Amino acid sequence: MAKVVVLGAGISGHTAVMVLRKKLSKKHEVIMVSPNSNYQWVPSNIWVGIGQMKPDQVKFALAPVYKRKGVNYKQALAKTIFPEGDGTTDKPFVEIEYVDESKKGQTEKVTYDYLINATGPKLNFAGTEGLGPDKFTNSICTYGHAEKAWENLQKALDKMAKGEKQRFVIGTGHPMATCQGAAFEYILNVAFEINKRKLMDMAEITWLTNEYEVGDFGMGGAFIKKGGYVTSTKIFTESILAEYGINWIKRAGVKKVEKGVIHYENLAGEEKTIDFDFAMLIPPFAGVGLKAADKSGKDITDKLFAPNGLMKVDADYTPKDFNEWSANDWPSTYQNPTYENIFAPGIAFAPPHSISKPFKSKNGTPIFPTPPRTGMPSGVMGKVVALNVAESVKQGKVVLKHTASMARMGAACIVSSGYGIRNGMAATLTVYPVVPDYEKYPEWGRDIGYTVGEPGLAGHWMKLFMHYMFLYKAKARPGWSFIPE
Image (cartoon, rainbow, N blue to C red; front, top):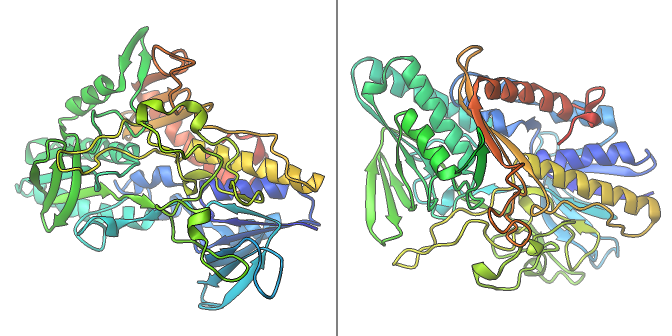
């Protein structure tokens, strides 16, 4: 009998555990370790943050699903990986600490034959002074944060209705933050809501971003095919912002937030500020703080993890100039190079380099987006890792038949820009591959035939349909495995 332990019940980890349970017989044990009691469909948090959905519409309890599917679920926090065991056992294990009320504070050694680290990111609000929902800015990174953001947004809307002008700043809250797409969706929906209430003359809305050009989205931007023409995501994004009456400030690294004031530095090295009444800024991401130790108890965290706390995998981490990197540097199996039975899909793996060109201000501050790995790519990675682990269990040795390099993978994204059965809007964007490959596609970096964008009501309907479809899939309802990642 084999034991497979999955850490983290986000998109990547939950996908992995469901695939493992489907592919492996019940004689093999599949264990999920996650501090969260609920699964959340993160892409729909923007609708919670705009009051169009309640938290219960984007989440569900994990325990009943795992019980039904035969997954051993431990609501706990993974603390330390012992990939060689310790003085008491030669079996590798993860030391966990329970967070559920019945066992809170208790620790346990969970042994494994294969370990999948899908812990995702730490929302590193502390990386920017004054950032976060317990400080001066809002967040939509969790359904709880989004619910609070909606409460605060309503206060600003009420003030405008009473004749008091409000300043809205939405974007990234750190010089190297990622996930621009979520913030971009949110600012469009906020503008849509303000316009719906006929309050645009009372609002000043600003997109504040660390992107060199708007529309970069952490993937170096793209050229998209639309209506028979090829245009850049820069033009595509600028036109949407202008249409919604949104100003933008780019190449900005937020350094500090105080009540009503955001301090940022630009690439020219200038220290600037922007005032706000309501702000929603995406925090930087980091590893969750997992540690590692060898058999003697010596700390080997730096052996398994990069300095940012994300796990090293089968990528080329050799220091190179940005122009020397290639698509082949990106991982394809997400296997740790030191321990062949450990994998890290989704946001948990350390990218080999940025996709967007790195820039530094005249003061030496790096100001550029780090690579996005959320949504569809995370699900695909989780599935591929699970398929390889399942095959390895069956064959009694490590087998890596399946791959999912972001440089060989496409992604589809639907950017919500307003809601409503008849008036909703969304821009459907597909890119292939996610990581540009200028050796294979020298002109555009991507296959222009599969890199397209189109705004409209149909996109809104599609995003709404996908919300219910992917929650259905995540609940492992009949036929769930036929729904693609």
